[in-house]
Length: 531
Image (cartoon, rainbow, N blue to C red; front, side):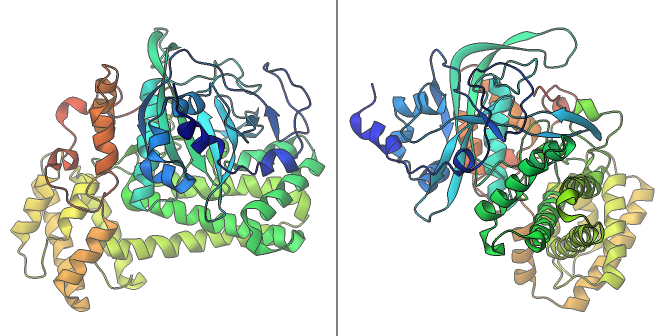
């Protein structure tokens, strides 16, 4: 039984549920699948589960929210963040939105397996929306059950926190809790469903508003609701822009473009591939949202996607992410056009995305290579040639860039060849070796031109190039153990990934190339949307 102090720690959190209070809601109180019109949300309670049990929690996120460690380890915490009990001040709801999926308009989508608990106000007066993923059906669940399985919940929990510590704009995760129930899933969509352990993740973000929230109202010609949502979003999430007006709408859209560009540049910096960049998976705050079939580049291949659903078209491949983000912003611009009535200022805002991404990407590449600043005249070719070399040699992106910091200006070609071979998944043939020699010569000359002190360069490179990322095979190993009720690796990974840029003694196995056995194994390379 929970103690009174543990209960009160959750029941005394300060909630300010602006989204529900200020926006139009669905008048229908019953929870059944349907089209919802002229509403931003539907009130809905999470599904009660049999035997909630804590698997792991983020101590940092809990501290930010004002939840003590004692409360996090209490039975009451499990009850609340599995969805069995609403703490004082919580008001549960599911959001209504639409979106483009794989380039095609899909109509109403909405929170099909996500239920928001409310908005906590922390000690800095910042709002944090708490959202349970896998907490049961909502009016937006369509033909699905609204539940989540252990494997996808672990992946989302770990990746949310890993991305934060990498410095990538992202939603966060507070906890992952086992439900004590079994969930049916057809992991490969091949007609062979299996029973899997169920779980619920508590996701956290200042807002979970997506591009698709605005798109749906425009698609339905519900411009009153569109205007209401835009003005609420500006006041709640972009108050520094001032009181909403047509001019402020444009400033807001420009900021969304800028934030999105910065997020995508970070994805490219660390080699992250989202896998499902549908417009309903794009945050209005420029946060990475919805961790499904994601992955990190191992052997460098700009055409790689982790999503089995996208295997043929590869729309969401690594090298295409910057273009897809722009395409998605165009769809948001189309949704906002009825409020602006002019295309030119929207296009000018879209141009901000292009210029911000280019500037941010160049700056990040300079950091990754240890350069004082990016020289567009010479460094474009240096970066492009390196990308070709990494692809030709099937080089592990994370390990290569990390190792590159140790290459000194007086290093010889053999040192560079050794790095390339040690981080390659294939064999470095004579043609590739010739490319490597040419590139290394150009790189050494570029470093000599900067004449940057080596300790300073190494420090800068190691701050831009992580040593530890959440490789899919590592996540799968943690999942395999968790399914046997051994949660040690989940917790160990969580701790290692809190310091991705710092070498950690005894954690060498988390900074190694993907083993051969993991190349084709389910969950270790490509994943389905069911993952």
